[in-house]
Length: 386
Image 1 (cartoon, rainbow, N blue to C red):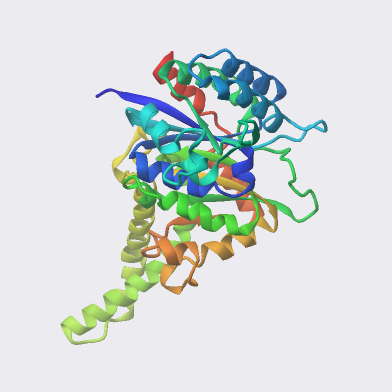
Image 2 (cartoon, one colour):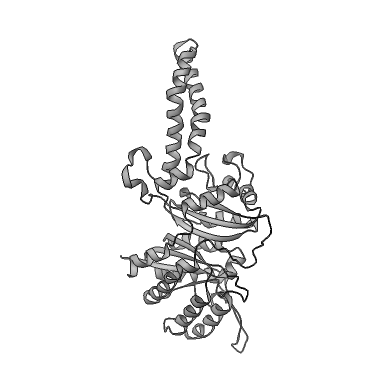
């Protein structure tokens, strides 16, 4: 079978109600598709108008929905009169029959009447009077029913991806006092080993923070990015872990040979074994985040996309750094509190589910390194429909 590219648009209402993680978890676990791109949009008036017109003119859309959906989009997606934008999260999925699988997982607009086995059945609303008049309509998510409609929709959103997408600054209902911060979360590669609800479940836990999700990107971290991102950790690992390695080596040698290791041996090990062990641990972290062993990669290959996926998220709000780190838990999952991300999903100090920035300054540095602002939607559109 040939692979398809499908999209899901998570509506402003679903984002405001912090249902994003539940939707993502359901999509990943029920479709078996690969999540290949994620981008936050603050749709401009022009994008909203053209998207509504696209739906009005499409015979692929159920006639009754073709009447009410454009009005919903014009009302809920457009910026407010004072210029604040509404958040819309676009997710791209790749795989066999991706368009059909997404459509089946999301369900029809009327699923909310008596069904909970689809995303709309759980999160959407389509309420009518006995006379058939629609009194409330909230689709929760939007997707394309046919390949032609997917092509047209992605062409439009890719056109506006650079101008209307990225890390949003003027988000509706985002406080603007002196304590507002941005912070970066990375849902690590172990959560994407196979299609599962884990990434969505982790997002659900972070939603307890009450912060706004203002940026998202599906990332295959390159070795160059990993080196810049984790570079400050290398001397720390050389110092702390190197010292532990030397201590253990001296204990083992003393036990094996039956005499205390002299200072000269310890000094020699400190100059050789200690840094080597620290570097090995550093390269292991790089390998976990990129799927590549750094000493074996040379030249321009360090700039290429890595072999494993992770998901970067930018949250904003009052004391964002502290709130996210409290929910994340300490580096060692065994020491994390019940209900924290790392206690629930972490395995060990390295495979510990997620990363979060430790200061507002580091957050800005890290957001820049992984380039959450980058437009990846256009690249996938070009790959499939150019």
